[in-house]
Length: 155
Image 1 (tube, rainbow, N blue to C red):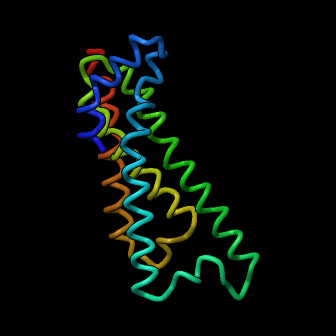
Image 2: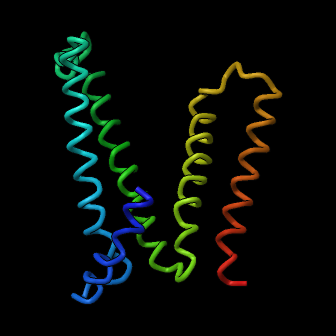
């Protein structure tokens, strides 16, 4: 994705020349990049469904309410995932010559928020104190590094 965004700078420039607000010039690029991702993901999931004989699991469940809830949360996860790229494109448009740092910041903060969500959802319940300490130190390093990268353009 990062390479796709970097190689698509000419598309961003064409969008800007045609009157698109600089905050949103990465939207045509996302359409191209994510369309390919969508197609390959659908093909892969159908292939695995046939191979594992599990395609019917998409519509069949012992608990229809749980199936609906799973689809609802999947939709929410997809919207959140897609919105990160919208915000990524908007932020990247404001970074000037330091756009090369934007992908590292996005990935680092994705790790931080996913880990914090895991703590909130008790996914780390039962982990040893040394692992929790190691993770807390790692998260602090990621946060401080993202901050340093973020302010590097204003120094």
